[in-house]
Image (cartoon, rainbow, N blue to C red):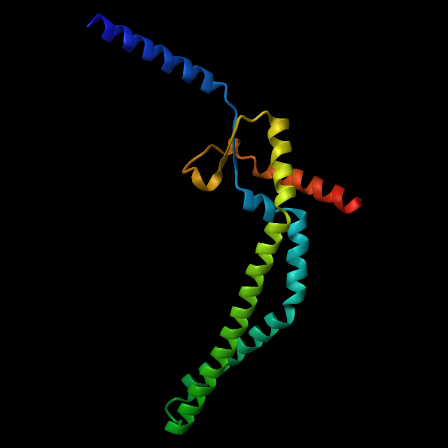
Length: 175
């Protein structure tokens, strides 16, 4: 019985000392993708993508407008349209929807590829930014924001990493 009390007391001391040492641990939480996509480099890439796909976006907008006009015309004139006219309008609407879907799929696929390429190209800079923020802030542990169900906003270092990333990319562009 006495040994059990000694073991319990020993374990309690170990736990208390671990809690005490953990209290001095500085923890940060980071959403790396948010830091990356909020950076100046991401804004530049985003602007380039908007310019590249402006024609596709205009075409999609035009198709959407044509589709809406066709639907309005159908609703207004449905009672007086022949079956043949209804089929033709329905076929036209389906053609417009297919064209619109193809444009959306092409743009979405290209955007995903560009985003992946951007993330890949910025891996080293992101790692450097995180390392520098950790060193400057004296952090002992950095958690991924996506894996933390809750954290106090004061622990979030995402904005600091974005700022550091902006500094690093600015220095690189000056060289």
